[in-house]
Image (cartoon, rainbow, N blue to C red; front, side, top):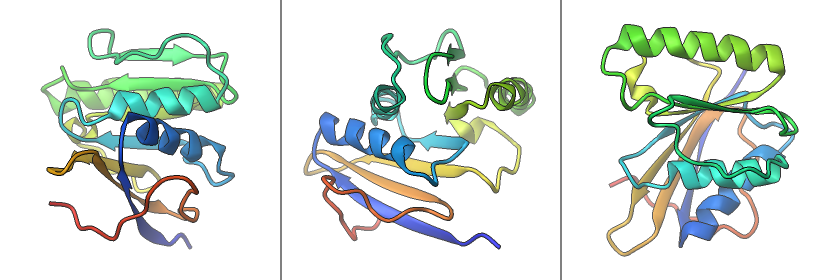
Length: 163
């Protein structure tokens, strides 16, 4: 039986966002599927950059908005970064996601999905991270999912609620 809990952090700056990404993939209980929610500019790609750094990926990580997906097979484990922003129809988003999920599983890769709200699929095994801008600066990050690890060191914790 899996237990779902939430973890909330206040991220002071871009480096804290990247540090959270690094922490997510260095945990033994890291997710195989991470859904990233947040408006444009909320820090989703910055978080993935931190993840890639911790996975040993040296090539630049950019948003795959136009390419839809980027594969980084040299990571340990490999990383598949999917962006569904341009897909307006749920059926198209679902089809692309299912293809990329199959590829990620065959590679033993971590699959990270930006704009998962485009999907109509239920993904109960996924971790979901919501990033929002804080009016006073920085970001608020809320992680949800089954069997989440304890809070990371070096990232300011907050009990704040989402605005």
